[in-house]
Amino acid sequence: MPSPVGHSLAAIAVGWAVNRPAGPRRALVAQTATLAAIGIAPDLDLLWGHHEAQTHSVGAALVVAAIVAWRRWPIGADTRARLFVAAFLVYLIHPVMDAFAIDNNPPIGVMLWWPFSHAYVHSSHAFFAPISRYWSRPETWPNNFMAAAHEILWLAPFVALAWFARTLKRQRGKGPKRQ
Ligand SMILES: [Zn+2]
Image 1 (tube, rainbow, N blue to C red):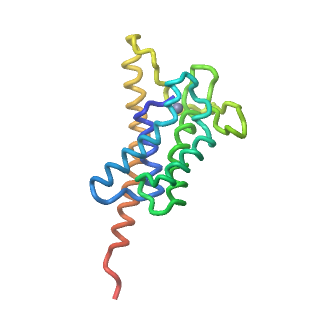
Image 2: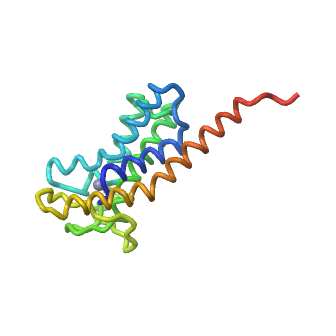
Image 3: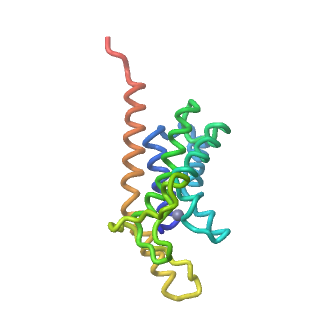
């Protein structure tokens, strides 16, 4: 599985691609933090030792999207429908990334289609290196650092692209009207 850094960056990129970055600095900080929190939320299942199962699924994404839309979490959308769609995609990018990561801990993959299927989905094309949770081993720290650096290199351009595409569109929208 990728690190929280990679999951956060992917969630922010998807969130900004769907809804433009919020304007004032406080709103932007709240939006970015909320997107990152949704992006890493599936891995809360590590707390109860049932990793990459139901929380890494379409079903969980639907539940989280419903909560975000109901409670109107600050992710930059103005309607409940847009909040729902954005939160669903932001949450779902996490299990999709995990499915495209090297996985050394059986069961391999994620329970992506739960509750419609309990099968674990994993791609043979791995883009992301695995993060080790054996923190007492000396090799864990450099390995995880390199994996996180690799994620930043891959994902930061998408975050920048989403930011510039959205802010550019907003500036054009505010531009002077033609005579
Ligand atoms: Zn995960």
